[in-house]
Image (cartoon, helix red, strand yellow):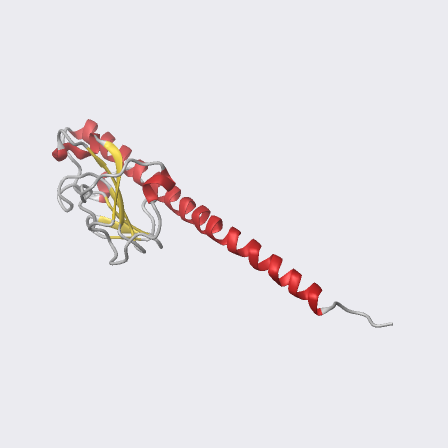
Length: 162
């Protein structure tokens, strides 16, 4: 008596695995991307709140990280910080007074707080996303980040990203 699998059985198993991976991989990619942006949005919100508190305490916009009561990850320069996937710019003077900005390193995607009526006081604005313009990368977006993250998209680079 022969033991083992027939060629047909092996082909069926390989076909099933191929179909499952073709369906699951894009969903997995979206889930990972959404998780990365969630972490970045938490950091962005923390910086915005720290800037608001600093403004309320001093009566003027803060210019340096040391003035903010927030921990920033990894490398910090005068006006920016960096994580594995994102650039963060918190200071208004460097990025055109748009408030805190997160730029995705892999594609042209930026998220910031922007106020259409008063762009100088952008930290009081709403959270918006710009994709395909400006950005920290030369690569065009591979997915609709505004839809994925449920954040309103602006047509121009209102965030002054990177």
